[in-house]
Image 1 (cartoon, rainbow, N blue to C red):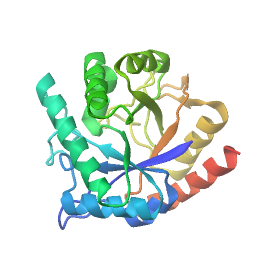
Image 2 (spheres, rainbow, N blue to C red; image 1 turned 90 degrees about the vertical axis):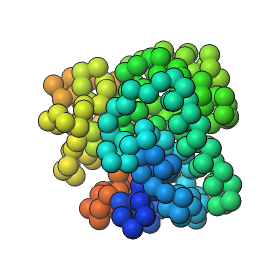
Image 3 (cartoon, rainbow, N blue to C red; image 1 turned 90 degrees about the horizontal axis):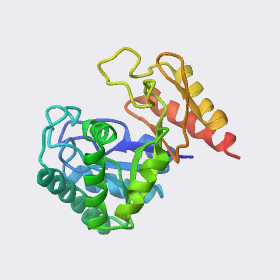
Image 4 (tube, helix red, strand yellow; image 1 turned 180 degrees about the vertical axis):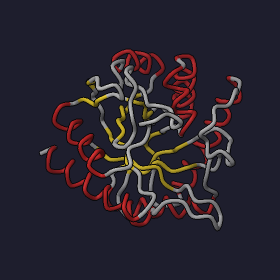
Length: 246
């Protein structure tokens, strides 16, 4: 199972995350494209860092919401969603070409990601937009019990999927992420996160907030490297993944 991490989310002089420290431990770098975070200089630096560490590069587009870090839903029209996706994907793809790497997937950010998982029409629109841009790009979506349904939907639009699970996020009984405003939405202790990782690798499941076991078949695991403790945790997760996957 590949580890992916949201990176390049600093903005000008404001620093977010520890990209240099976490990059060597991950397989996939989800790079912000300027709408919820980042700027052209940060994007280029992050792309070059990914190339130096042989990490796959993906566009991490979000709603145009710098103030809210892309975590607030926005009522955008079909035309607006299509445009904001194409704008951000094109920006990262173009900069990747001159940074020694190549973009291979798209993972929507924050509220756009959550809205996509709850709205079939939005999911289809995002799939169609990516296919219109480049059918070789994969779309990262949340692994749920509906993997086959989404796989069929993606096949009709010509897009391949990567299914994702989360090491440090709480799940509801439908297998979706708990809103960050709810109790149990984010795991902060090391043992809970490592226990989640082991459960995914050994049992192919997660335990919901009410204690229900939900079967998942993820291709990739989302981790975060926001501080020194989380970077060390990502290193331990990578070690566990390498050991338990063999």
